Amino acid sequence: MQEILEIKELNTEDIKFLKRKLKKGYILLVLLALFSIVLPIYLIYLAVQKQDNEDKGFAILMILVVFGFWIYITIQALITVLERKRGLFFQKKIEGNVKVLKKEIVTHEGYDSDTISHEITIYSPIEEKYRNVSIYERDYQKIETGDFISITYFTMNTSIKALIFKDENLKYKSFTTQRNVL
Image 1 (cartoon, rainbow, N blue to C red):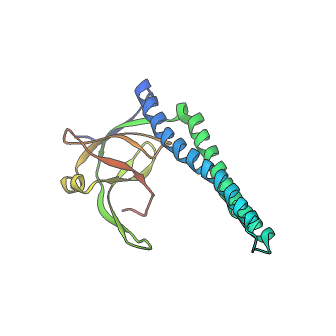
Image 2 (cartoon, rainbow, N blue to C red):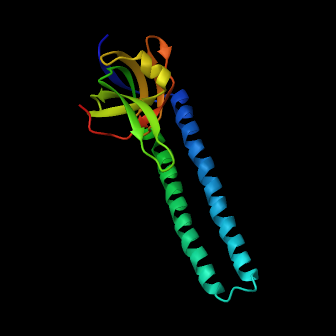
Image 3 (cartoon, rainbow, N blue to C red):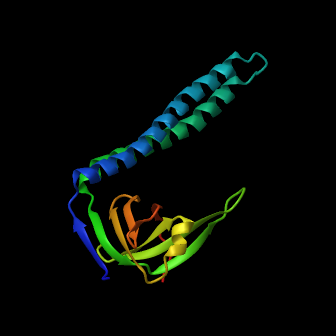
C-alpha cells in the first residue's frame, strides 16, 4: 500500500457531517449563555433580599465581575463557532492512505485522577505537519507502527470523518494537540 493523500471537493454529506459537529458546540454554548444570564440575576436577588448583610454592594459587585468575565468568555466562544460556520465551505477535505509513524500511550495528569489516551501519529504531506489521532484502546492494540490506515478529515476541524484499518472502521475521537514527535 502506498502513502497517498489527496485534496477532494466537499460534497453534501461532508457538509452535513461538519454541520453536525458545529451543532454540538451550539448546544453547549446556548446552555452556558442561559446559565450565565439566569444565575447572576438570581444571586443578585438573594444578595438584595438578605437583611443581615450590611455590605450588599460588594456582594453585587463580585457577582457582576465574576459573571461578566463568564459572559465575555461565552461571547468569544460564540464568535469562534460562528467563524467556523462561515469558514465551513473554505475547508479542504483530505483523504487517502497514510503510514502510522508512532504509537504512544499518553497520560494526562489531573487533580483527582490521571486519564490515559491511546494515540497514533501520522504525517500529512499536504499540510506538511504531523497529526496525532486519539483512538480507543481496543483499536490501538490492533495497529502497529508502519501499518497503513485510510483516513478522511478536514483541515480546519479536529474531527475525523473516517479512519479505516484493514477494512475495519476504527472508533476514533479526534486529532489531539501537537507534541514533539520523531
